[in-house]
Amino acid sequence: MPSFPDVFGYERPEHIKRTYDQVDFNDRAQIEEARKYYIREGWIRVMQARIVRDKLQECYRREGVNHYENCRELAEMYFKMLKTHRVTGYKAQERIIDY
Image 1 (tube, rainbow, N blue to C red):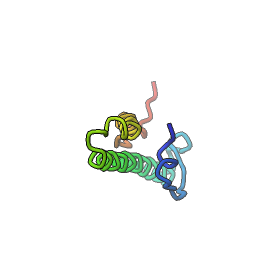
Image 2 (image 1 turned 90 degrees about the vertical axis):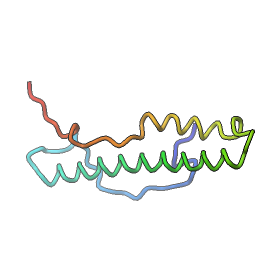
Image 3 (image 1 turned 30 degrees about the horizontal axis):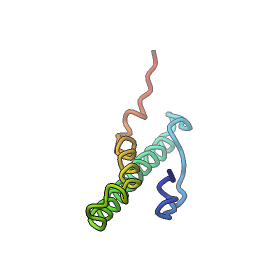
């Protein structure tokens, strides 16, 4: 099954890609960049799921009784996205646990 950008032809602009693995937690600016990146990526995933949901609703209305066959690919993509494309907070990613 093709991924989201391949299906709908969307391309995302480049941003600073700083994950929490690359952060020195003593540098506040790096933490802020990683936080913004994490939040941005989370909302991008949510909006991708929303677009697929809207396309699925449109297909359902357009196809009528044949929607089980004709909208199957969109439905499968949307149900997979429901598990992974959720908004999660950044606080859990910033925790440093020393034992």
